Length: 249
Image (cartoon, rainbow, N blue to C red; front, side, top):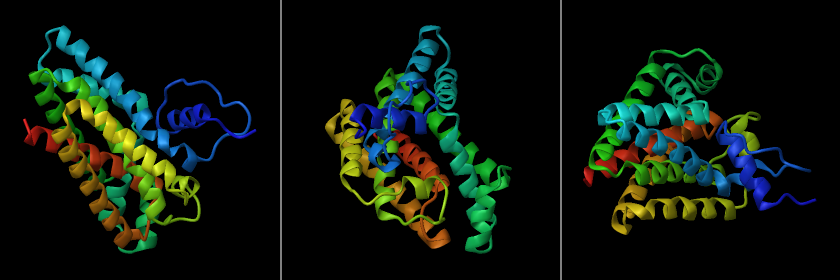
């Protein structure tokens, strides 16, 4: 039996989150076929973060504390998988002398100085951005939109970038059908529209630009994408989204 769209969406949540979405009945869809729903999984994570931020605001907590609660909720929902990718990529690209050594370091579960610094900067910038919007009373839509859009850039990377390894998540998720990638891009942009059309366009541009820059670096460093590259791409796109949004305040 051909996998349904519901099964593709369920696989997207199973892949990108730890949220309970039930089992897939029958033959599971391919990862690449499910990639159109990756921004939906992101929107779900963003909604959880927005609820946590809202609880902090209702309790009268400082905006920074509410922002940290939002980050913590999102990290619990995803198992910090994207943050893990960012740390591994920073360690590999920063510490490896050649392609093979970089890939070896990226597979090492231990975290090094480059990874710690990258995580601190990324989490810090996201927290400041969320706090700025929470203080202005507009964090909820931004949390949902940016979480969705930052995952919407990943399917196109699977189409445009070769897998850097013969195995691993990047290889298993690779595909050649652009339809899911374009669908993901449209869904991600739609999730930004509550911020206003002009703001959505500028934030989307910043996120795509950040993803493209990281893609170029990854091509030079290791010749393609891996699961860690995709995780890091989500992180830099999210940071770029918050930077752009705060610049427009």
